[in-house]
Image (cartoon, rainbow, N blue to C red; front, side):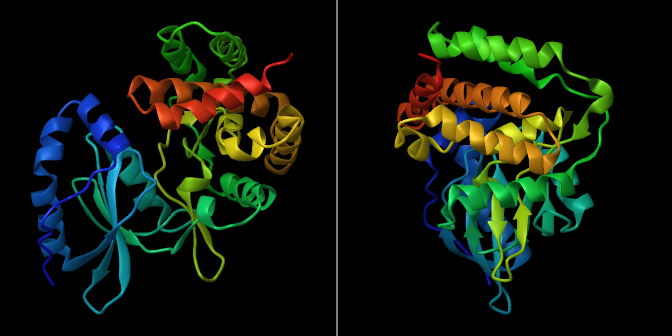
Length: 294
């Protein structure tokens, strides 16, 4: 099979991230030819583009023999090689299996359902994430003070109460960072980065794969849920209960999980707003405002 797609639609958030990256303009211009080349090389036909990603063009494809797979072509980033290595080393243990790899463009097994679109209740999604995370944590090397990097992003943002609170949490997470307790994390353990197979198997995709505080990974699982939190009278109480459950399941400190979750919520909103993705940013920031003590 050979695919020659007449056009490639790139989600706006992916386009914005590409334009902000070194070499991203060329990547966007060359993307149709790159897709056609990968299809020729791996004998694929594009079935449908997949939404939900923020830093790659992703599509479901059909291989020779009519089996389904997923192709992912990431926006240029120095971390792409690290992501590829982590997936290859895992060989399906907690992550999706890589079937083919060319210059960090990946052909991966197809698991049909994204956890965030599974229809499962938040408690069940968070249980799956909390059980999956310890399976992918590895001994850490070259630990990273993630909070220090997030603090730099916040310092460049317009001042407002949610930014002030996030800075407070960033300072505390940085001051309490223990490099000797760091593990190699997933790095972006959101429900959208977990796929479910028909047999119930759960597997991560898109690891950012750096060494840091394991409570950070747990906090990331709780950084969104904006519609659910905005719909209740006591969003802080609901989020606190989720933090306690996730912390207990993963062996982490619930206050650290709470602070990482808030910090990630605000920095995600700030970053999306800086890219011009206001509709994406606002639910994160509005929920963060609701979580502030009155």
